[in-house]
Length: 117
Length: 145
Image (tube, rainbow over all chains, first blue to last red):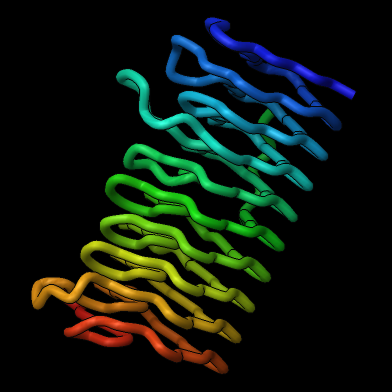
């Protein structure tokens, strides 16, 4: 079980050209000072059985990648605090994805929606 | 590393009480490619346009919505459930649209669906009940070249 309180980190996860699986845990109270909390580039990733809460700005950003997000909950994003957009999942540029059995609850987004594709 | 898959999918998800200051309170889709959304619930989401789903596409792509409930979503302008701008094909099947509201302004259109150039459109086996707006209740449709 992963339990992470990561207030104030610069960038929680940044991966390129790899496989990343995070399969169980609670990640809460995350505020970073970059555009994305987790950045996945040209990677195959699985996020499963995770609870995310209290985050700012974009939680998961992925491009040129495949992504599976299943059995996850996303709740209580922070209001816009600075210059960055807020979103739970932001996907762009040649992405293949499956988002399954997830709950998006009480997210306060600036422009881009809880899920942005 | 990247292995492209053509059928992107959102299934069995709940979107509740999400808010966007502009477009797509729950989901914002800009050039998403072919996409299927099925067996999801959108409830009490808020935005200016497309409180549940905002969709914008300029390529020949298909959006499929099957077995989805849209309930109590509120848009301050257009499309409390869906705001669609461009698609080559759109399929809505077995969906329930209930209690969705846009602000009562004569400039606001489509309390449930705001459809601008949705392409080949099919709506089947779906329920529209107790939605509120002034113009285009429940569906506003326009097609411009």
